[in-house]
Amino acid sequence: MKPIRFSNHARETMSFRGAIEQEVIEAIQTSPWEPAEHGRLECRKNFAYGQEWNGKFYATKQVRPIFVEEDTEIVVVTVYVYYF
Image 1 (cartoon, rainbow, N blue to C red):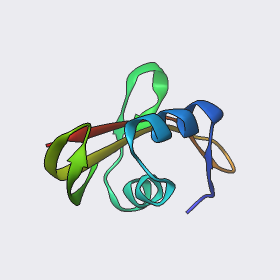
Image 2 (cartoon, one colour):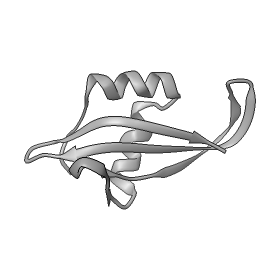
Image 3 (cartoon, rainbow, N blue to C red):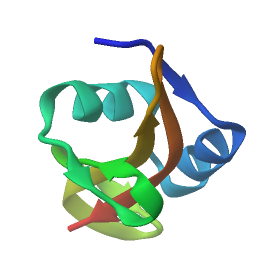
Image 4 (tube, rainbow, N blue to C red):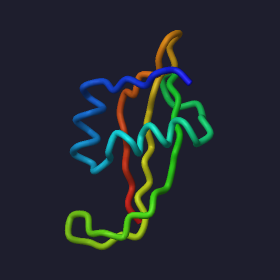
């Protein structure tokens, strides 16, 4: 697999939304890729969470990176995180 690079925006959104780099990498490496808006790609992976986020307990965290596959690398543009 190609190396994965995180844009500055992706790093900021990960921090704000509660994702870590390893979760994003695992999602990209192990989940099916689907087309996203603006010619980008996306995937989703659920992780056992079992913690509080913003004062509410959640059992599962879903990480959804949006990325572009270039010739020599995969560039993560942003990351969405859902808790349920």
